[in-house]
Image (tube, rainbow, N blue to C red; front, side, top):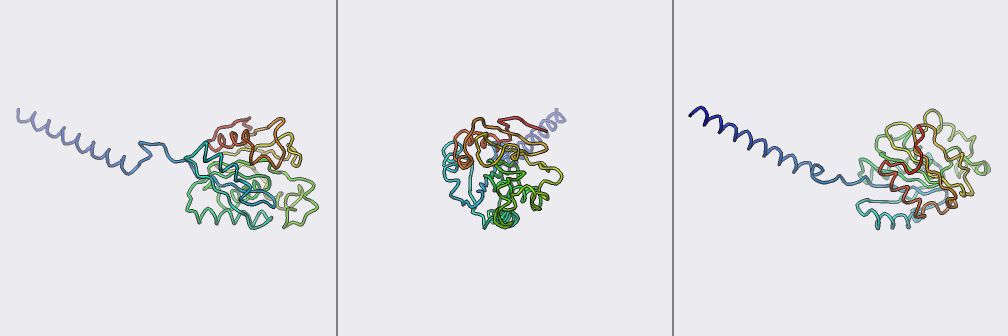
Length: 232
């Protein structure tokens, strides 16, 4: 009887220690009992734009996905390499360890430059809206530092598109419209593993950042859900 009693006491002690350990673990890791907070979303405007470009989309995030934090950056100019450094500095200043990036038009190029050459590990998802991934001919008339990097034959695009367009573990999405009017759909492609969302008839180029349907695609993409066709 004595032996059995001791074994029973040892069993109770082990259960108590195990239960206490579980409670401590749950206290340390709140994500174990509640869903993790989504990554913040950085909105990157296009050529000659500003953070105000995103006012309507930020409102949609607040209304339809209030757990998400959507913040817009104002880039320093029209040079994608300098803009990529500004994106890096902005993320560091915010203290973000993981982030989703949405780029409109040329902003998608600045964001890709950041991911490919500066910090691929911080970005979870990348979404571009009407971005001239392979350039537009009209940009060839502009100085390199003022939009000319979007020229298909520019050294900038040559470096950016060398090798894999979609490196690393980032979930890549490109959203483009038949009625864009500025960027050909063929230029909005991403070669490699990426979700392609083709809107037909879609919306004009400058409306892609405030359209309700486009927003729904962006929301899906930041959850790593492809609203179009995933092309490996």
